[in-house]
Image (cartoon, rainbow, N blue to C red):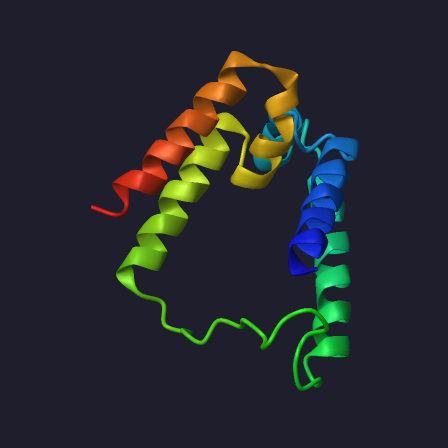
Length: 132
């Protein structure tokens, strides 16, 4: 059952980022470029996501366990360490250069864009590099 709910959640996320045009790198770069042509629509998408997440968090965190899992999987490391800071900087630089982050990039695979596929290939390569 958990795999079905994970699939549904992933599908909802993909549909949401596609519907809000967040799979379009130009739209994302329009948000990241703070000039006269700034596009604040990504801010609205982020605010809506935060509202949904926050509501769900506060509704379910008091429960003994999730509905379809043995326990909650909450992060317990609150330290701002070197790998976190460097990873955030690299992630932000990649997002700002290309206009994609992992979720929307995966949702945009169906576009068949060579740029999207190259980004995903580089992203997967980066995941493997970090293990070494």
